Length: 101
Image (cartoon, rainbow, N blue to C red; front, side, top):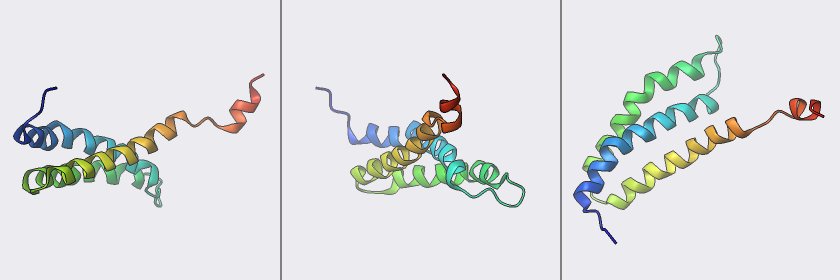
């Protein structure tokens, strides 16, 4: 069994891990944010917040002493927002399901 050093784990969590989690979080945020007056606030706000989310995850991975906590926060965000996106794509409307013979 190959053990990854803490240095490489931190690099993976701060680099590609932070990018993937922030993109999935952006996609999930569009599902739980309210639409606003124009109906597009739930689409625009996550796009604007992606750099902030990425920076938060990046600096958390770089500065936190406990690597397990960094991994749990990242995996938690990924699981919750990934689940929201998956539920949205796998959800079938009842009217369309009942119309098919």
